[in-house]
Each structure stands twice: as C-alpha cells, then as structure tokens.
Length: 328
Image (cartoon, rainbow, N blue to C red; front, side, top):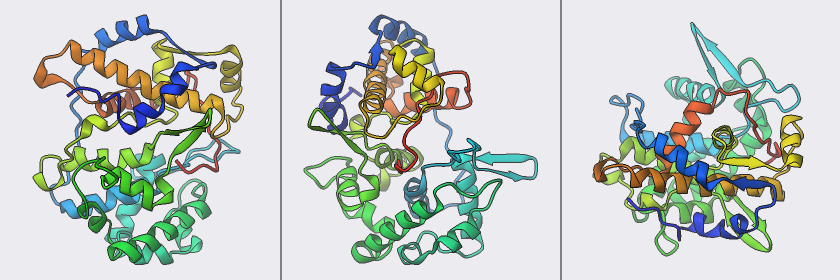
C-alpha cells in the first residue's frame, strides 16, 4: 500500500516541513533506521473481544477517543492511575477500565442522551483513582457537546454516525473523518501556520484506526482507504524519532523541553514538532516498505503503534509538553 502524500493531513504539512526552524530532519539517519525497522514484526494484537458485539466496539472506541486527553496533573506531574489487585492501569488504560466497569453496572455510556446530560459531579464519581481525573470539567463539557449532536443527528448512537456514510476516511466531504471533523468540534485538531491551515486530526484518525484494526476483518466495518491515514501526532512518537537521531531540536527548543517549559498549543515550535513527526513517520514507512515483500508491507499507523509502544515508558528522552487546556 503506497503512501498518499496528497492526503489531507500530509498535504497540509508541506509548508511547515519546507520552513522548519526549530526541528531538523536527518534523512541519512532516517534511511539507516528504516533498514533496521524493515525486519520488525508489525502485527498488532488486538484485545480479545470475542464476547463483544462489533457495534459496541465501535461505540466504545468513539467514546474513548472523545475523552482521550489529559491524564497527568500539570502541577504535580502525577499520572492518573488505578490499582486493581496486582495490576496498575494508568492514563487511557485506567479510563478504559473504568468505562468498562461503569457499563457493566448499567451506566449507559454509549447512549448520547446520557452523555448529553452527565454532570461533572457524576463524571468524578465514576472516574476516581490516585488523583482526581485531570480536566474533569473539560471532559464533561466535551461529553455534553458530543452527546447533544448524537441525539440531534444520530438518534444518540455513534453506530448510526459510522454507518451513515461511505466506508472511507475521505470522499468528497462525506468520508468518516470529514464528517467527524465537520460535525464534532471536539475532533477539529488543526493549527494555522503562515496563514495556512495545518490538519493533524490526531483523535479523529485514532478513532477509525481503532475500529479498523479491531473490526477490519468484517466487511461491514472495513475502511477502504487506510493509505490516507497518517501517524497520530502526540508527544510520544517524537521521543522515538529524537532517540533514533532522525529529528533534532534547536538548542533553544531542546533547553525548553529539558527544563519542562510549557510549549503552547499552536505555537510555531509545537506545530513543527507535530508536522515533523507526521512527515518522518510517513517517509520511514515508505522506506521500510521498499525493503519488504508485497504481502508484508505496512501502513503508517502500524509504525506509529510500534514506536509509541516501545517508547511510551521512556523517561530519558525529550518530550514536548503541550498547552494543557487543549483537548487533543
């Protein structure tokens, strides 16, 4: 599967890549790392959902990505974590565990009517762990907004949204990502760079990657144009790329990151980090595929997942810190 460099996201980052000031890309090192990564196993083991209906997996995936932001207290830097027996769940994993528990006891988290009406008090009573869920008010507000649209347009059900258009990410404004971004403000992850709009669309893409990776074996849920999907521009994958010496930061930006100075959302520095991440992962995937057999070729999200998994627990590398009030 070839990389579509004219996809909405990759096309939009071109002006950023052509004018990088704070991030540098070493193309020789990129090719060196691509050779190493060409022999890696990219098979993704999905959760055992044999007892779950595909419809509920879709509802759950969309809910998770609606809430998938801010799991660290920005003052104390303590992560949201939950101890369950001998296991510890943190960040998104803790939230997912608590969603599952809530659904098991009858809380209708998959119903837009419930999301529209949930209060911050109720939200906090469901999500209790070692610290208060960060940005509880913002998360509650997002649920209310999303629930309202689901009720008004899709009878309160994410499944109706997914099934109401083509099984493509992009198709003349009617694709899954196109409709999600246009109808739900929560998923509009864009920035302005030199007067032009740059599309990152992290959670919109992540939602449909989750659905495709779990349910792609079913014809009803197979997404046909996955070559249009990019990496998910967060703060972990740049750690991997910096550690591999494919990207380097300017001295000023490097000092900021090392000192934990907040890098504001939509700043030139943040836009460059995110754009470079998308560009490099696309190029890496392209170079990796040149070295693999046709039936072993990968798509960008598979590489993203591999890098994210390998470097998520790495505390020694540089991690950029985005403005905490931005829910992506």
